[in-house]
Image 1: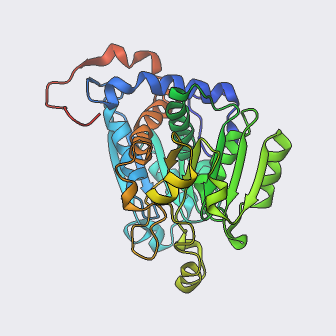
Image 2: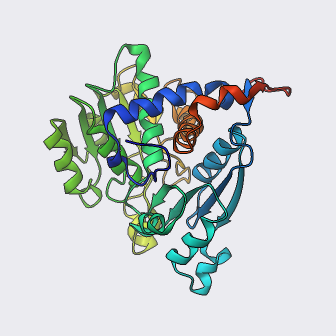
Length: 337
């Protein structure tokens, strides 16, 4: 695809070569994300950060990625703090705010809303999540993490074995990841969820039509026995009609160190898009996994910076200028990476 000036709305925009291009640029961002170097390549550029749904990691990650390239961030969070609360349409909001920004990152609770916004925007828009639909940058950082984590075992994304566990019906991260995996070969996927929360049938059919092997199950232990990755998700309580309905499924698939030791292969990597629900009645990933070296959830979050820096550099067409505007950092940066 032509990255320069493009919206990033769905992973279905990407061919395999596009994904590998993003990963190659993300690799080049490591000195900056790891605070060894600083670049001002986007000095003067403005990111419009518009998050109409709660977010910590994604919102701050987008902003930090832009800052690390030398740009500035202007934020709107929540409907109550925007003109939408006064009845302004997405069209009008897009027309106005795209005049203030060079690129926009947006999250909205309604499916298709970011695409509607992008159609009216005068600058590129990146989808930070539209309801239960898609979350393309999360899928990219997940796949980037998978590639990094399994490389030590000599494995690649082709022939990957992965179990996706939890709320697969409403979890936009797993929807986008499955769609992205369709660009690769010979993937084995186990979808572990209660019957009511299984992956949407059209996504399962897309995986199978690509040639991937897909198994659906509601049993955790046997499903994680022979996989490279266990990708856990929380119950998306905000998508349910009531708290009581969400509570029916919360805590159904808890992974702890004992289950991991008895059922997983020694190098099985544990992933989660975060936030993990650490409340006592939930705990999809127990705290006793925190010292497990194969718990990759925080490396996964760190990788979000690399991938989002890569997207900004590609969309704003500055990939080959990043190093030209760089210098060594002059503050303490030890101990983080």
